[in-house]
Amino acid sequence: MMITPVHRFRDIERTPEYLQPEKCVPPPSRASLGTMWFIRDGCGIACAVVTWMLVFYADFVVLLVMLVPSRDYVYSVINGTLFNTLAFLALASHFRAMLTDPGAVPKGNATKEFIESLQLKPGQVVYKCPKCCSIKPDRAHHCSVCKRCIRKMDHHCPWVNNCVGENNQKYFVLFTMYIALISLHALIMVGFHFLYCFEEDWTKCSSFSPPTTVILLILLCFEALLFLIFTSVMFGTQVHSICTDETGIERLKNQKPTWEKISGWEGMKLAFGGAFSLGWFNPFSNLNCENPVPAEAAPASEIMTQEEIEQFLARDVAIQMLRE
Image (cartoon, rainbow, N blue to C red; front, side, top):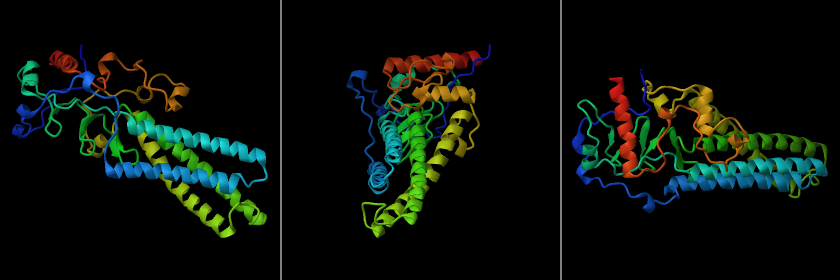
């Protein structure tokens, strides 16, 4: 019976002396690890703050320039509720994408003793990262900003100040989707408001002076159009990556798949945490433990102890031996 492992062992280090496993330190115990994930990158933090400020600016213009002065109460309530709901979901998705561990591989487990404890057979090698001193599975890549190896890393996004990996891709997809929706909604409302102001007196269609109103609407229109295009492209790219079971890095490198690909629908269920439901669109729902793919294709846990890492790697060694 042919079994295709998800994580096979490779060794692409042509100069293994750079690894220096004797300088690696064992990973900390589970008890000493915190649950908070936050990347201390100045550029990423600035981009994240700008993202929130742009959403707040859009909300300010929508409410105080267009909806509050409107004489149509029903129109104002419906559009105000819809826009603020989508904006809240967008910021919540951004918050989860930024503060969720994207799938970091434990650091410092490439010690000489640990490698020897694996008792690898001749010809069986492991892929060792010299930058974070870790033994990492296939499809993991090192991020120079996060300074960690990330499982199924798609890319590092400064707008969420985090990598997009297997554990937070859902939240990043939701973030791009909700930003695209509020951008489209804002563009539509700006168009209707311009028509309303042209037909009525400009002094009555806004709480601000006509020049100020025009400047605020033009800025919002430019912002909404720019982010609509950008986030729509990112949303489509992410959905395509999930459905083809191929990350952005693998696509850029034109990397031939060494893993057993899953179908597009199974990939969506794996990324969004189960069978289709309203929870797919909820940034507050965590990825549940119900795995829609076979057990041998299940990813490793977010944080593993030394013993769990050894069991995980030993399992893949056994699978590799069955194939041979």
